[in-house]
Image: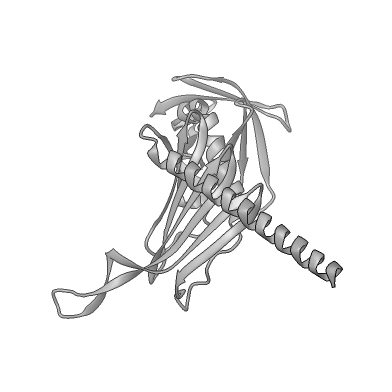
Length: 266
């Protein structure tokens, strides 16, 4: 009997310690979130919808990253579906995800000038919301309120998604000087009917004055321009030999062919 009692006491003690540890972790996360929300001088970087979505949603999308002291602290993403805005906030501490707030904000109904019942896309209310707390790459707490919209499945894989979005934002942030220098229209000096247009992280190719294709881009090590088609495996890598307000010189790392462009429009 004494042995059973000892086991019960030990188990209870372990459960109490675990509960206290979990409570301490949650308190630390809430303190960290409060510090992040107190920052007033964020550097804000954004991703275009086509940079973080496979297809453009019905009512637009945006994703902004907020940096303080050269580190990403928060991501806020909004995606406009046919029935609701999906709003997700990600918080980071020491480059690790600590908290996610996910909500489905349904559009309110209104009546237009013709007496027709339509959706008011400017006014929403929270239909469903979930809160996810993370520590060392694992979810340590979760709670939710409301009922999800029947046509929208709540998201779950926040850790992998946050890591991917952080990677995209960090790439733009830490290579921001190179991305800024690339923006605009560049004509190929050997054939002025061929030119490139860089808009954000998208490269548009024109041959003989006609649009040919578009590629996503990323900068590696501040000196390699990577261009790729998102729907297949074709990837092109160019060493950036020189870039300034007038000239862009690239070397194809596969063929070693050099391409030189002159900037004609910012």
